[in-house]
Amino acid sequence: MNITEKQLEKLRGFVTAINQGQTQIGGLEVQKHGLLHQVSQIQAELQGFQKDLEDEYGKISINIQDGSYEPIAEEETTFEDLKKV
Image 1: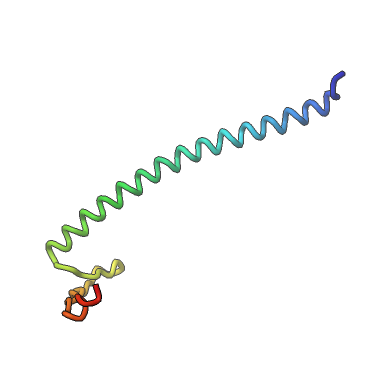
Image 2 (image 1 turned 90 degrees about the horizontal axis):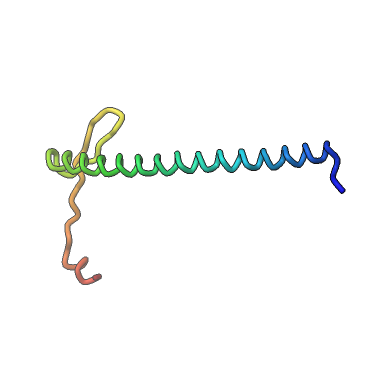
């Protein structure tokens, strides 16, 4: 016994669609993996650049819209702070 040709074609269509979807998901995962590595590399480069800026200007807060900056006040440790530790 066999299912009808129309039913077989419909079944094949579902299987093909699922397989294509899985293939596309795999491709997207590969792209995602590459992008995650790229972002990680950019973050490492940013940290190095931030260190360079800190070496040149000290601890500052930079407005990335216009490049202006303000010094960041260093927190002073007091005797009271040490007692809390």
